[in-house]
Length: 185
Image 1 (cartoon, helix red, strand yellow):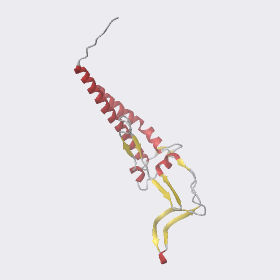
Image 2 (tube, one colour):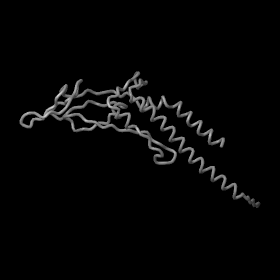
Image 3 (cartoon, rainbow, N blue to C red):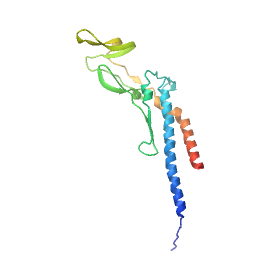
Image 4 (cartoon, one colour):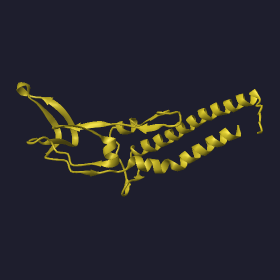
């Protein structure tokens, strides 16, 4: 039986631990930078810039900018090596108690929206809208509204999938630059 004994210099162990710590920090920064690139592309797709959607070239008309402003990056997310890009813009329709996430509807589409039995939905048309106080405490809507029995289904536009596809070359460049910097330092 042979015995082998390795003597490792404590300075080399400390150097390897320093490299491991530097790699951990650098990879976390690379992930955060890649998520920021994706956030930029997602905001761009929600801001009226044409993009290749699920079925055709799509444009999401920016009305208030709330959807684009809601896109955020959380890094690190659940581990130092992961991040998430997310957003939420909730809305509802008069005559319907349900709340809808506009970003989810724009990505995946939605089914038909129907109010409770015997009610109609008030859908804004062009023009100014406001609540008005009338005689005897009457409150009503003023402006251009249409009353409909249901809102038909809407296909998704795939704005986030398009953002991921358009961001891939930039994300690959961020990763390549980050790893090159890490290996050459």
